[in-house]
Image 1 (tube, rainbow, N blue to C red):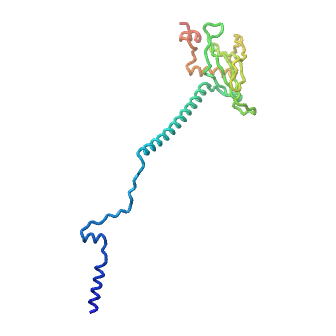
Image 2: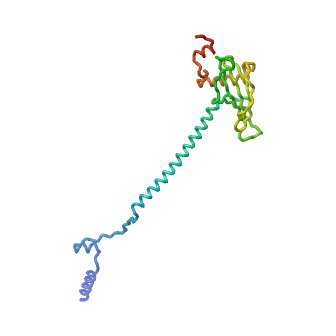
Image 3: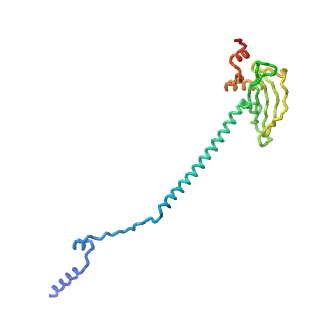
Length: 227
């Protein structure tokens, strides 16, 4: 008898136990609740704030781009200045611890005094010391030599030599031109080196013919061909 009552008690306990939510909903025909585990975040900032941030970012990039462009222009200007300096002073040769340069900017043809047809080349030669020197100066000390070159007779005339620190003084004392000061070129001499190096450069730069001189004048004056 007691066994019958025990079975009834166990059945009652099972019936009283709660069913899982999904199973209970399934049994009673209701849809289960959707359970969310994450919250939805909302942005409460204004649209104007977003655009202002973008503008600030763009302005920062613009400032950087301008700075880089300015730096590039400065580098281009410096490179251009160096290039112009190199073009002005053209290397000739080295001798006795000095490097010789032709000042191509001031090289020019001029009429020889007391002559209506012959022209001479007026040049300045710059000398820079390349050998070690115990004496130091800033700005660097250098020398300038002034010559006339006479292609018609392959002669050279020395006018002056200047010792320069910084900029040269424009008021200089030079030996006056004289027809008696022309020197014939001696093979292997320093003057021979200066003369032929300078003339080769002037010819290469298409400046061998004096300015305002026609082909006919050149043939008559240099090659002694009469047209």
